[in-house]
Length: 254
Image (tube, rainbow, N blue to C red):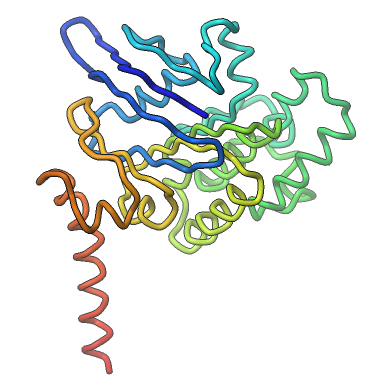
């Protein structure tokens, strides 16, 4: 379980995150959504101490993550982010296997895990394992980044727009496979997205942020039925407009 209690992050006079309190239950997938600059990514990075909070606290399974060195904590929590951040001088296989290697896994076990994850990401191991990141497309790099986040079999995943650079067909497949993977492995996931359609399709609950604050937390059905304010309603208008536009096109073609 992830617990955020009155989490605050200030940069000088700027309030980036303003008193966030949120619980993510074991095995639950919670999406953080909202406009650019609302504090989503800052909140995510405070969970694994890539950013230290100004005040408030985080608990992971009842423990204070500050009791562990930051690098050790980040080895235990899978983290995939928008900029991918692959090591340019390491092969795809070495990038995926870097955390298991730090944790002392045997080479044969690492190789098997790398190949398993490449298959899940629709990247043929024999073709991609030994390539360098610069030889991959942006979408392929994002898939390798997600594989790296999963490599050490973490129970918790923190994800920041992991499907953002994928083409629409691959993105759709990866989203469906991701939801199946979360359910299969019982992963606890905090997922940052600007895409409300993605959140509605994949999340158990959605936490909407605006101006550094949480404005509503609920299931997709609850948000659709009872948006808390105009900002939440505005975010939900986009998938509705897209649905209506497709319905009109389909109706016009019949």
